[in-house]
Length: 167
Image (cartoon, rainbow, N blue to C red; front, side, top):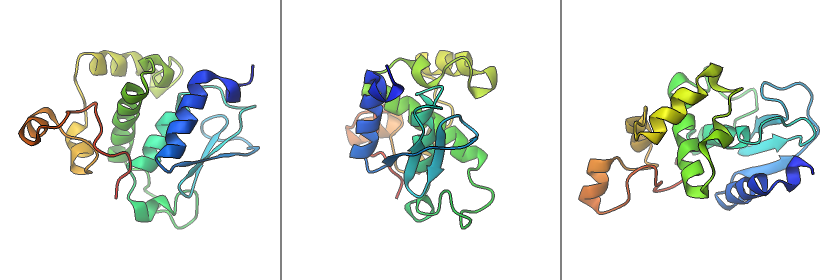
């Protein structure tokens, strides 16, 4: 069975399209993550080369935490050379955890053993225990609420997301 037909991949692709991140199937050469490349508000996927479907959510996290103005520049020469920053990376990791929670997918789907510089188990352990490194950053971006603010506003705290894309 092709990864394109995988039930988890279909769930992820449908979700991303619902939140207005375009998925474009395309033949890709060598890319940083096999079978994936980011473009202006889109993710290019080469299902024949894709090794880890969870990487789709992580890459979507990069688009989601990027301002709408810069999101249109991703994959072009106009995107600032420092993009993504370390803060963007942390926010994308946390965003992908929020997406996993929302989609009811296992943490290992994104945090597979061959990713995150052999720190996948560390992320799984932290997130499973409710330790959300970088939460103030994601909250500052207006995407979610920490526990205290959520209680004040009578809304659900992270990992629930208030919105999926940064303005």
